[in-house]
Each structure stands twice: as C-alpha cells, then as structure tokens.
Image 1 (tube, rainbow, N blue to C red):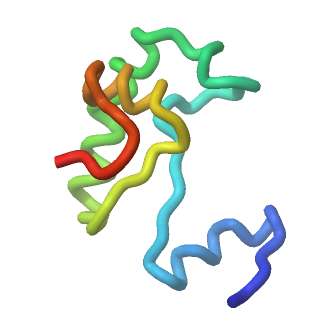
Image 2 (cartoon, helix red, strand yellow):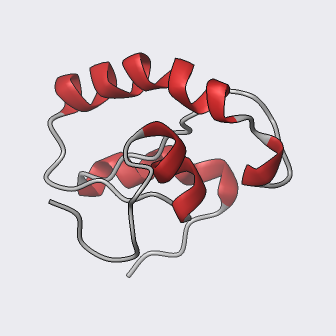
Image 3 (cartoon, rainbow, N blue to C red):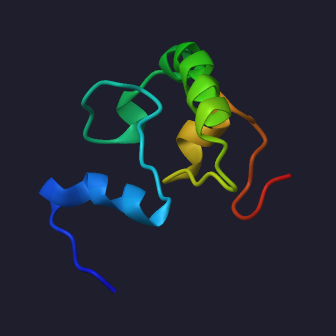
Length: 79
C-alpha cells in the first residue's frame, strides 16, 4: 500500500484507477447540485467512460448516480 497526499491524487492512474466529478463545479454536498446539472453533465461523463473503458465505475453516493444514470438506482452492483 502507498499513502498518497491529496496533492498526489493523479498517481492513482499508476494503478489503473481514475477519479472524476460528474458536475464540474465546487459544492459542499451533492444536494447542492441540481438534477439538471447532473443530466447536462452526462454526455461528457459517458464520453470519458467510452474513452477510458473502465472495468467498473463507482459513484460516491446515490444522488449523483440517480440523477445522471438511473432514478431507481439502489446501493450495490448495478447491471
């Protein structure tokens, strides 16, 4: 294991891990981001997914996933 500082977050790419935001603006909580912002960010997110071809995608919380991908999404593995 390697302990990374926040300034080294790009190093996760060395292990084939990528991190991104759905909505590219600062917010303290996902609840501050409006549903239309998640939906309008979806094309760019899908393009990044297509380019990077990740084996899996994780969302930090259900709100962004439900707003951008599946309103009925639940915790756990999605199809």
